[in-house]
Image (cartoon, rainbow, N blue to C red; front, side):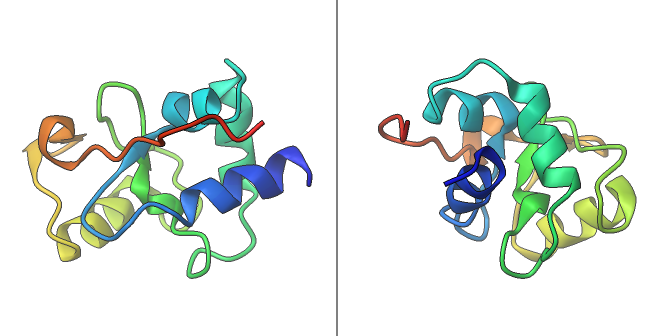
Length: 105
């Protein structure tokens, strides 16, 4: 399984109404390369199958370069799933953060 396909498999586990971070995904994969996780998500070929809108920065900030319409679209998708925000750019991580139980490496 490639790095990118492992990222996609993890993102597919995040349920509606929750988010995870690039770093959480990297940690679950047994790496510290959160930037490469971001690269994988930016190359995501199918936003319906792999809901990358559910991935945010470590402080809950939306992705300014979200591959499927930018942060405005990411915000709209998360709001539609019931995710709440502390401000227009930051998800309420205390309430909506999804973490992975064990590394998948």
